[in-house]
Length: 196
Image 1 (cartoon, rainbow, N blue to C red):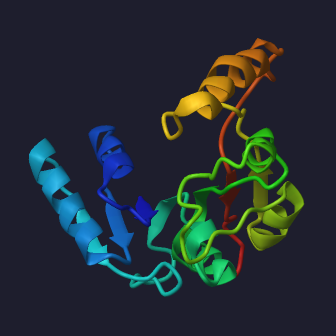
Image 2: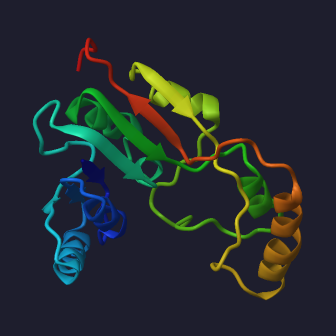
């Protein structure tokens, strides 16, 4: 499996512990250095390399599973990154992406209370409606988009805004009935007959 934007390898270590043969790529050399130290600390093996998600350094159809959690919205060319993930995904494989939902309670509350989302000061930060994201991943043969259930408790903000958010809004929202399943972002698969 491939993680695009692996950072320090936190999620990649979990995949490796579960038995996956893992590869991680990140645009930041410092992140890849931290991931190497993380894997050494856990006594695990991974192929880790510095690379741009918009131009992945791997041949076509190299991976059965491609994972890009919280990466698409920070890249200058989101279509190129998604296209590269599809290119390196083997026929029958699965890609999982997580992005910010522009049409969500979390985004609405951040606007109303003027509480910034994580990494909102990044050079690029995009938020997608479900329809916009579906168009972005439309070249995949099978697309499932599942909005994550928000809000969840936040450790990013303190003071009265954090207290109101965690104590009132989150508690009230979580008292509402839950749908039968919850996941983040979207999953996409490439069928055996698909063109790259």
